[in-house]
Image (cartoon, rainbow, N blue to C red; front, side, top):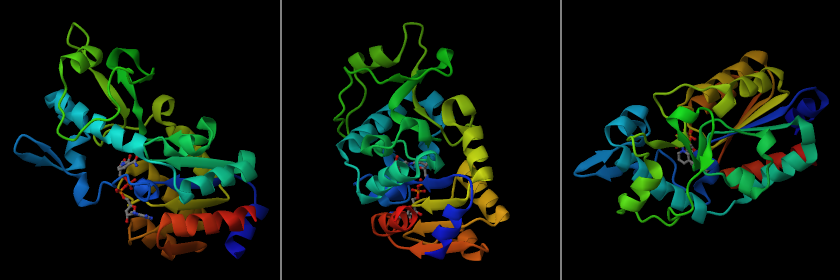
Length: 267
Ligand code: NAD
């Protein structure tokens, strides 16, 4: 593919930007499907309402239960062909490889991508943070069961692990919808800098609803570099790629198109 050849002949990173669609074929639901909803009492919450600092302050135990359930789903999942293609891309491209992921499931690193070149811009569901220890993150305590049924709520034991005697809560290490990116926790400047230097941006399985990914795609389109978008459905990103001078849209699944694209880049 000529687009790949031009990108390889140029200088700068090949930036891969991934979203929940990459892990959908590993069995982890995206935020767009019916499974995204979460029931608290008689109320049905949409992820955009629950994944917020405001919701956590109002009902920390319910928000924790949602994350503990989702952590179990993530841990039970295995990397798919799209994750493995990105491992091969890093192996071949070396220092030219950058992966910016919105996924909190940890599957890219579990598949074999290096933590150094994988920017987890929305955090990691296996980690927590105490509010008075910014920017330190810690693994969730081992005593908290990984297999967490959907209906299970926090008990005394979990409460004691996630809340200090004074009442301060630990929180999941994720970026919530009413919070801002930064460098120490979420690699904001590193991601923007990589986009400004990139020879090519490849966007996979993201709906385009969050701000740093939108900025990366905007930078790529303004710079006129090759911009490839792989998605099952139309999105703001597929529209931008369709209009970009060096844009290409591949409508279909991540496991179908990403390995083929990586073969073009690593051939
Ligand atoms: P999203 O749920 O908003 O969108 C997913 C996109 O992927 C959609 O456009 C959909 O059409 C597409 N898609 C679904 N299956 C696909 C497949 N097999 N191949 C290709 N494309 C496919 O997800 P998002 O854009 O990543 O953003 C939402 C937020 O949700 C992020 O903040 C992210 O942190 C969080 N989230 C993460 C996970 C995870 O870690 N696996 C799962 C759900 C949500």
